[in-house]
Image (cartoon, rainbow, N blue to C red):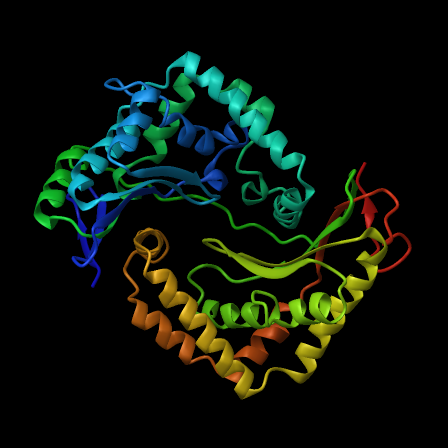
Length: 420
């Protein structure tokens, strides 16, 4: 069972003991991401994440890497549009060592200016890597165009120009304003000594000056884009999107089932009809991205340019049929079994557990037990699913495509605009 404790300064400590394991996953989540950045600081959350690995007052970058390697541990970090995470997985005997080192990286990084310049080059290469891969880029582009003009649509990596402008004091100022105790969650799952780890949490995080930041962030407006960007590519890569649900929306469970039925499994409608029955695409799937105040439901496919229009038309017909005919009870029950099974299987990973516990804190401000989530999935009815289908696909599609200039959408639905 998940336990929850709030330090006097507002830092939240959530943990779950699993004494039958030999490992423990430990993570620090900060409730800030790319959507919280000003236009001038676009990409700074991701840059900070990189710089946490580049040396502290006690250890230089190589020593940090070697210290985790020496104990056979795994350490990593990632940045999203709404939060940043620094986490590790180690044997139980190294739990305190791992948390101590993570705290050191978070609060004692030097942000050495020479290291900053080197890491800027690394991230610029990361940006180029994504730009060179249209299959990846199209997913960023659909968010950018659907939430055009809002920070939620801005790429997490920022741009070369933004990176070049960052100075050491920018990182310090951003941390002081955003990395406040009330925005920090420490999440632990696995085998560990609770009392010793709790004492360490108090020692490493209890000294932080108590403050509370009310996140001031406007909600984005959805824009139905219709854009094609000519790229040198063997395939045309397409994303279609409509507004989805916010992370805390109770209908998220209904949407999870709809997503599974439409395009998130090998038995889904899209996979079976587009790939298996007609062989029109190798990759075709759907997914939902949930945020604090909105969401985006996306369908992706990649195929030969001369088949792109045919696949588009087929997808529209599948959705129209889904809206008209709905899903029968037997099919819904199969989907529930699959979704719930996937949920429990992921729950066997301590890394997944700490992520789930942390996001519960960040989005709900409380813990949602797994059994509660399963019960909510079981409660979804055919009527709920039908209502969600009607509402979700009532919005106009946002359409973006990347591919060769001899694009077969020209003059056909959708009426796309050429970009460049």
